[in-house]
Length: 80
Image (cartoon, rainbow, N blue to C red):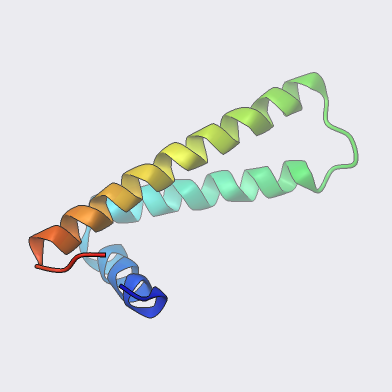
C-alpha cells in the first residue's frame, strides 16, 4: 500500500473507529506535552523522566493504532 492509501485508511479509521480515534487523541495529547518539554532549555530530573515516559507511551499508542490498521486491512482484503 502506498503512503496515500495508508493515509486514507487512517482517515477512515479516525472517523469510523472509536478506539482508533481515542488512541489518536491520546497520542496527540502526549505529543503536545512532549513538545512543551523539548522546547525548554533545561529539564529537571523529574521532567527528564517524564520525557522518557511520554516517548514510551506514545510508541505504545502508535503500535496499537498500527495493529488496528493492519486488522482493518486484513478484514477488507488489503495487504501492505
